[in-house]
Image (cartoon, rainbow, N blue to C red; front, side, top):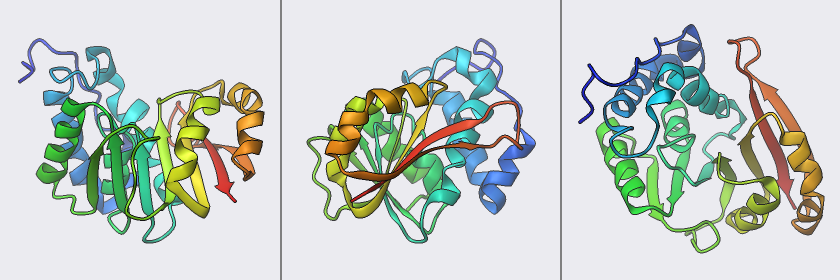
Length: 215
């Protein structure tokens, strides 16, 4: 267990948290506390992330929640510490999240955290995206900090149903990634390709999302 006296200072909960989580804010608060306690020890986050854990990671991930259809089955690729998968499960209890993660210690964390938080809408699968077989195709596939679009699109395309959506949290160079992935976008028959900028009204950091429909 991480000693609070030696670890970095945890960012204070920002006003944006209650905006994006609403009445689910206490669950999000518990999740952040668990990341604070176990994240560095388990190699899920670095100590330098604690001063920006809420804004850079948790609120950032939660901004995807309104983009999910009601009752959607969402496959989150490379879930790691639960960003955005566990965050979305907290914010949208009406959806079903399948968290896909290849590393054993991370899948153990995800399953334990699901149980601690009482998230009965979460399933955890150990494996690589291109190897996992879902019981049914997802309505939405999400990913955060996994790989560039030209790599990410081919390995996630097979997880989503026709007419479903890819939603990938990306960085400042997302438009460069889109340009570099033109061939993969055509090959995957993606339509309605766009880059969304979310959260500009909630704080200094915005969230950039690549969104596309799978035909």
